[in-house]
Length: 322
Picture (tube, helix red, strand yellow):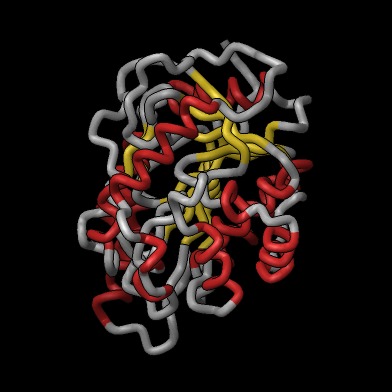
């Protein structure tokens, strides 16, 4: 049956093997035959060495090697924009054009039911402005007693979808976001009851120690009291934590080996859009167990920890990006 599908946007750079796994997994989704795929390929940095340049070339050859979806539209940049700038600009361009969007990066393997889940979520909650996004990842916590889908305040970034009127809430000014969180004394809640240093990451963004679109997306949604829909078990698996990106091993706690690659997630509408407190409790305990002593760590060490997004210090770039 023909349904109205959201465009998919994929951001790639210089990892052809990872990109192939992402595209092949995406192609196994039924709805790829009805979907448009936009691929943004970032360009080389100034004075990029021969190895990086060759990897960029191979990545670009790969994305053109097959008709991965019904239609594939490729944008290849001559120069390097950086991950954060690429995602902000690319998402803005495509969501403004189509009204809704599904976003992937080049090291995410998705379930065969990923597109069905994303498009269902976009349709079911299209008119619920309290819902800012649909997300595919959940931490590897105990799912006993959890509903098939649930809400948590904020936004997320490992395989996600949104609408133009929600993306318009994105605030690029990290200093403005930080000041509002601090003036309203929201650090405890923002840091998931003091279990993870998101406030510190926002401070690092203000101080130009990291360049993260995702911490700003999370903070923007959080401050507007908007919620993201999650599955009780991940339908996406990150394969980028294999040492190919700088400091990749430091985010291994977020690897979810028991992700759902075989079962469809059913989304049933509810107007009860609020935090699932059981999930929050399990997230808090999970973070505290894996990040003991985090409040005593320096900013430079905290930067090495994975935010809710996929990329800290990744892709062998000089600028630390998320």
